[in-house]
Image 1 (cartoon, rainbow, N blue to C red):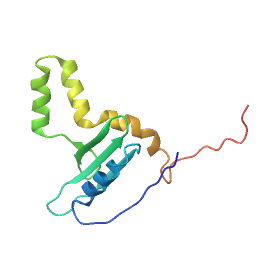
Image 2: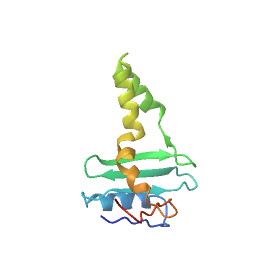
Image 3: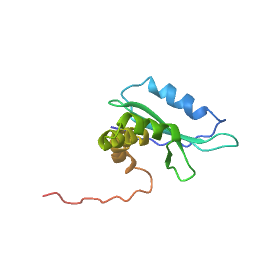
Length: 120
């Protein structure tokens, strides 16, 4: 396996174009983030071969912003069943994508590394 990280600059909407272009390579795991610009929210696209693509609007700290309508949908679909509400909010937050991509994030530049010099 290989891991790469690329910083990019472009006009608003470029993140969606990058994520769409990479989606054609179904075997890749990737994340594309686009910072906010005047009149445009920041976004993150996550993709895994098993789960497909996930998109979320994010705040300045990278937190996923779940809309009022998505929360209402979770309540309505749950119809009093907390497990269903929990599942719908988990989907809205992209938790499955985060779980699958987290091991790859640890390989980022500047991440702590423990070198093993002897294996028994």
